[in-house]
Image (cartoon, rainbow, N blue to C red; front, top):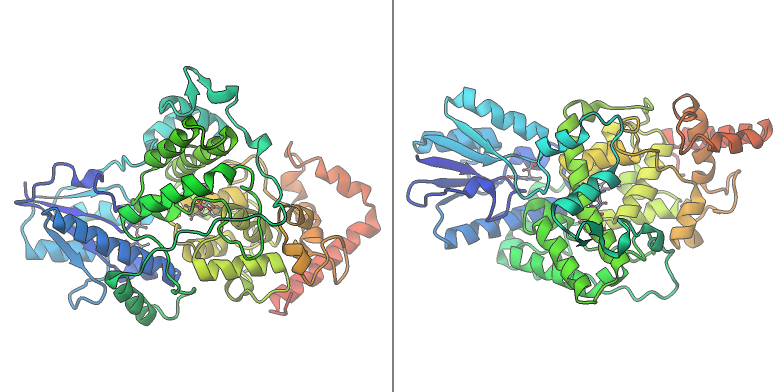
Length: 512
Ligand code: FAD
Ligand code: DLZ
Ligand code: SF4
């Protein structure tokens, strides 16, 4: 059977299911830099350069192994611009009996691929993406009959299934979760290790020039460019993380320090999500370091939970709930995204730092995304569509299957509590406790109201007040309404007035 095997930009694993049974004498592998994919949202320049360079290196690797690869570069004169039209072009060039592709990461692309069979009158086999550790149908079985899903219970099943950090049937150390020992505020003078700095070879340099020219209106800095773009280099990033950062991963998982964008995080999401690294190998590398006594249990458990827990859980929810999930808007939030999410032009130092780092690195760590950028979007009632688009654009690890549940489910509570049990709303004191941003801010985190007060402080209460009907019955946040009542009417009015004034400035593009 002469087979056209399509490999998408986030399927850069030689073990990918679409290559199983490959016959080098008859089959052709199609990879394509598609204008459509790079512009259906205006991805960060660094994200596009990273993926194009990783794709080009991956295709070279396949060619060196004797695979017959048709690689369509962005500027190729016959580039048809989208997956489906590129496939059609290949069919007009060669005769194929079938098309094989691994299940894509986005619902939008799945629909496009599914329509090919009828349109082109050729069998299209969409194979399971077995790089993930839980299939969508296994997740459906787990979720069945549960009114609310909770990551913690899913995670325990995954630990057992893959026998990770287990002493026979019991969790290593006697507990499933060591978060109580994690999440320390940043200490003065922490000596955070330098991040991985990849070298820019000719392929990457060419891609940097291409992207700078063709995507010059897109957000973000393309240089300096330090990402790994091959599997060998991504493995080095993983090794460096395990040796240098993992021991403190748990302790400082939620800490933010001005000028330290990378902290003790792993920076492997880019590589995991495009296939240069595989989740189980990262988990096993961390577990081995623990078994060798090189890292403490609280750190290794916290890290492993992110990968076999959160990562698989959000993907399960995505495929369970799409396409409706993308339209959820529990709070009926309608405010457009403020311009400072692009320009960083705000007096709120925490937001400014996180946007600046995002622009420079196409990366921000979890707590910056959740408790600064996400928290503000939640409190300010920003339309989930706008917030989702921003998060999909700006991070080099962003694909809809992982971005959407994190944004609509985790930060905006737009699904009404399906993914998370309560909104992650917080005032300035949380940011002050977990970061040093407030000491360089024009606002005063200790002031609750008035022109100098930290906006997060009054916006937090205003958010609860505005959404009383929807939240007062929530057992994890409902008790905050008692505190609000105790403030008395004058104080409550001041909170509403300060918030209104703040929003009127935001809506009129006045510096806040
Ligand atoms: P680490 O902190 O070192 O964690 C290790 C790994 O665990 C990550 O590489 C990632 O693969 C996984 N992980 C951790 N948290 C999550 C999570 N909540 N969901 C899924 N995987 C997780 N992650 C993405 O990969 N792509 C996204 O588009 C994305 N968007 C996000 C948007 C918001 C609003 C929030 C709150 C989180 C988002 N995350 C996303 C999750 C998380 O922030 C990133 O995975 C993490 O910051 C990547 O950096 P790291 O590799 O240094 O992660
Ligand atoms: C994100 C992305 C970008 C920017 N460009 C391409 C591309 O040119 N070619 C390609 O095959 N894939 C690209 N991708 C990744 C796809 O959008 C991704 O495969 C889908 O989002 C499905 O997960
Ligand atoms: Fe952010 Fe408020 Fe602290 Fe300023 S004072 S950095 S706005 S939390």
